[in-house]
Length: 503
Image (cartoon, rainbow, N blue to C red; front, side):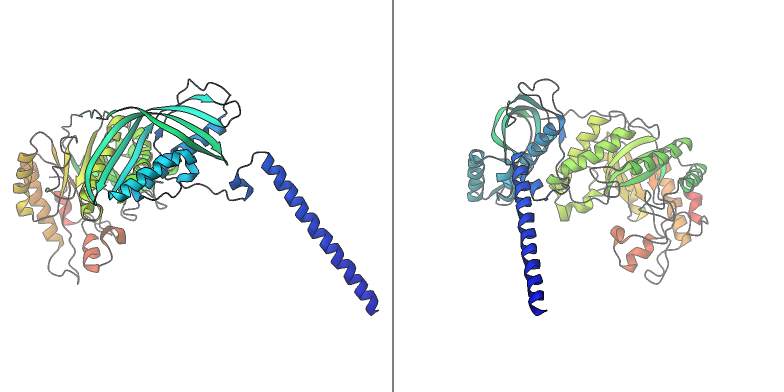
């Protein structure tokens, strides 16, 4: 019996060995066959992952050209992706003075000059922040063997900021044209040569929109989902009821906010656009004009983000630029509050680029910026169609501060884009606020607004039960007062201040 068991075990081991060898042989044979089909290395190793969107300049292929071998859309898309990635990794390399990713998108000979420039920048303590906004490539040759492409990329709009010893020494926006040779190596289209053929300063013409509409309005969020108007609790029936309250109160304008990430960043979600359309349609039926504030809850401003920001803005503005309810585009709510953390020059540069893009898409509607105070309101005032500022200071100083700003910016309409006080009188701020004090505040402010014929958008229609930490943080002496700026309390009852909501 023992000998029989040993015999059976020996047979089992031999068969297992033969099976393993057969499987390995099959896999090697399949891999060899797959390689000979021209498969990419990433597919062989099953390393394909969905690429994170990180660089999306506007790109328009020329319809003519493409001499040589026929090119299908799949090959064209691969060339486009690798070509734009080459620009992206080069921008990162010159910003960080590191060479990560360069070898994937530039041939060995092309890398020589790139490395030389990077080493020189390191030596001179220079780094360059840059991006491109627009490409117009035209394939002028595609080789018969499918391994070489020659293209011309004309009128590339490039933005650069050059720093030396951590100080900005030069910035420019240029329109450049290039001739580019790309080679297919190891599954990547790598740049072999890139030669600048022409260059000029890029100075966009910003159209001016005449604006003389007198706003009597309010910043609007629904009572139950403030700062999340287009989220899962979106209810157009509730919004329509609120619009009737606003119209009946004698107001003609609302200001709403589009959260950047919630709407999908560069890839704006259709479901969010559908909700925004419902809001605009409801506003139009209620005879309300709408100031749409873009980029809410966005605060990065990094140059490498700019093309993503532009695609986000482009989608929204193109979709709604013909809507009758639109009164104006507000580029950003209180961006001057980001000056200290993100850098004043960086924030202003970002605002200017977004302004240029909006005006290139929509020449009908006014553009503004919702500055948090009068001190910053002069910034970009020449390029904006009206100047919007917020005021939460002592009401006794408002008329003086307004007149100072009016003298500083005499040729543009000034809009008080936010103002108000809280009626909160709880333990965290006792004896400061009350419903009566709030009513008196709005009564006195309306006297000044009417006297000077000042457009206004008060803050806000409702008191709120909850305020997100992203708005004012978590400190209770900040959160609780923020809940009670409304003209209507959380039970839906009009507060005394409602009497002075519009007059």
